[in-house]
Amino acid sequence: MLGISSAVFKSLNIKNYRYFFLGQTVSVTGGWLQMTAMPWLVYEMTGSAAMLGTVAFLNQIFMLIIAPFAGSFADKFNRKRMILLTQSVLCLSSGALALLTLSGYVKIWHIVFIAVVNGLTNSFDMTLRQSFVLDLVPKNNLMNAIGLNSLVNNSARVVGPALAGIVIAKLGAGYCFLVNSLSFACAITALIMIRPLRQNIENAVTSLKDKFINAAKFLKKEKTVAYMLILLAIVGLVMAFPMVLIPVFVKDVYNLGAQGLGIFMTSIGVGAVFATVTIASKTDMKGIKEMAVYAAFTGGIFIILLGIVVNLYLACVFLAFMGFCLVLVTGVTNTFIQITAPPENRGTIIGFFITAFMGLTPFGSIMAGHIAHAAGPRITAIAGGAVIVSAVILLYRKILK
Image (tube, rainbow, N blue to C red; front, side, top):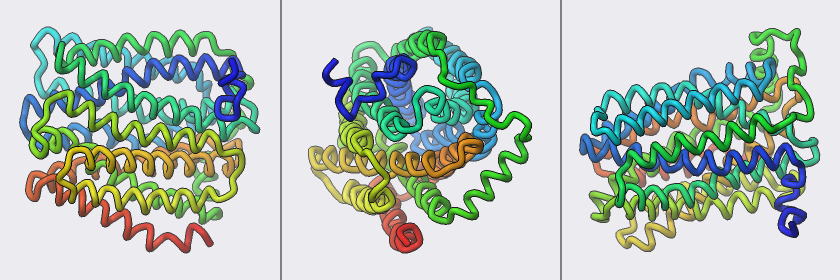
């Protein structure tokens, strides 16, 4: 248990968090199999970059509409029960997609429908799981626990796509959906075993409307947090460009198959893992705003380079650096907000964080698909990177003031 006693993994000494960590590790890895296989299946069925963007849009748009209100639910109701419900719905939707695909009856409208169901459910699930960490660890472990949450997501980003590439090539996309459905059993079992440190109904007499208003007032007062969320929203908008278009880069630019998709997605994940270790190792708030700003700027540069480069190995390197920067700006912003926000409204404010990061992503997805259809994936990536760099230049002084 030497690794668990080290600074990076110290929250794993807490039994509740350890159950959550292990269950989410399996489940999120399964999720990345599905997230890799679904766009591949869509592009295989339709050959349309625009349809790729449309499916991604439907999978993500509910983050913009629902996440802030989901955060208010997370403040007011029992998070554990709500997460069990959302995880069960996601398990069933993945199982349905697996059954349709493996039986050969899958149609594009099935995928569109399941994208909508998953988008609705995830808009609650993501906010709830972020907030649930507060029920598992004492406050002095919060920064480390948030970092380890990112480590789960981004280690899965390495393993999941690599496995997906092999599974798609050998067995087909349907088995990726099946594995994802089965992986939820681990997460649900872990949740059942958890006994939270506190029941999170911290201010039960406050209405959902008042919680939403109080959180909005906090953002108006704490302008640094508001500006960081604006920057994160722009990063979320543009980072959708290369993510949505990876199947296009793989098939049409580099002439690779499903295993090439795994290589590209894994490259992003490698960078993301290094970023999460960086976040989990951090023990205080010193320099955290600067880290977010510099990571966003550098990430924009690497997106531009991805659009310019013609060498496969360099593309993988740039994708790794892009993954590092994306996760770093997201992780440190999340940490800064959770530690700064008042406890009674933290779930609602996390909802704003989810909205900022994921809310504009659907528009980025559909824009990426249509711009790439008209101008090609390279021009799309270059334009997106330029937008992030410009945003950092405009917001730099406001965030660091």
